[in-house]
Image (tube, rainbow, N blue to C red):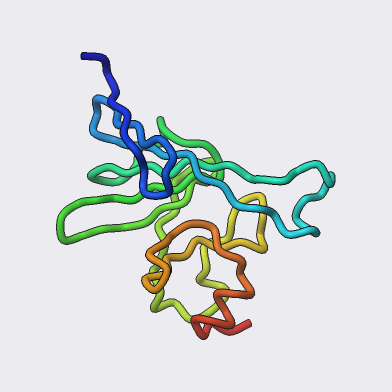
Length: 134
């Protein structure tokens, strides 16, 4: 058997699991008109990694996300040029505490229990629907 296995991910894309127990799924979002600076960008792709423990700097690119599946201690991280930044969670009500996308600052890392989704949400939608302030 090879070093990875492939199965369907939650959004229907391929979910690959590597030998170190880290799985990955390619995800994307459509940039807002002012975010698509060149006008040619129709989708922004990022990788969602899942594993146990804090993510290593050896994986990921800027804008990727990582879900730490440690039992009893799940965490969510976003990849920046020099680090993985931990999401403070939904209890953070100030915009200054949002983890903004490193290249698309109108997006913030968020988790929606109602939609059973996590990823890069439009910042103004988070403020409006989840009560964060400007």
